[in-house]
Length: 256
Image 1 (cartoon, one colour):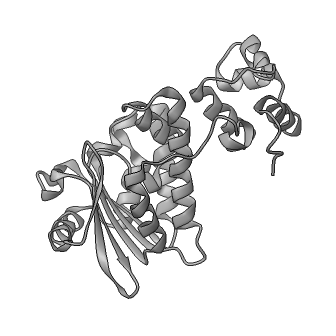
Image 2: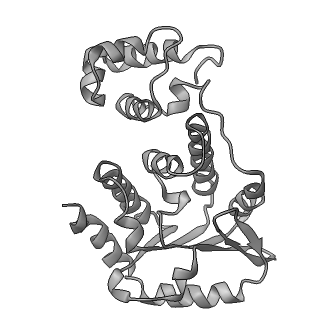
């Protein structure tokens, strides 16, 4: 636990000392000039967002552990009811056609996705932090839900290799958990009804299923889940089995 009153500069110095990193060694691993890394431990200096992520990874810390003053978890008001539904769910079934599902995203991937939208640069970190908190709330439970994900191959092909390689490694690691199943829907499957848009179905003990549908403006929760179940049955049936999906993610031939 860090002292909430400590600045990022002090926390960074402590983390560097504990891991034996110097400004020169850190600069080499992050890919910046040593003078730039040296300025990061100067009061009032905060690295660029992409460098904060890289430094945190090198030091084995979370970005919020090093720069708590710049990471304030944020999520849209309209999304909060669904976040609570995720935490209450006994099972989640998610289909995504264009991006990796939020519950399976690495910090770097989430940062890249959120940076491509309308958010201001200083807002992105907070939304990334909120996304990671969602993941912890769902998968960190004593009894996590059964989570089944179908991801279109197109989503796996989109992104810089330096971001996608760790992201695909993370998908493989998550797919190895007993409660998580990841299925790739290959391009060769052709057209399918899931192309109409991403959705999630949440099942809860003693309550009716709920669906979540995303669009360009905001997501919405629906109780009319019968159409979603029909689409789910289709996309799940044409997706690769679990073991073949993992092999597909390991091969990642399009990134070679």
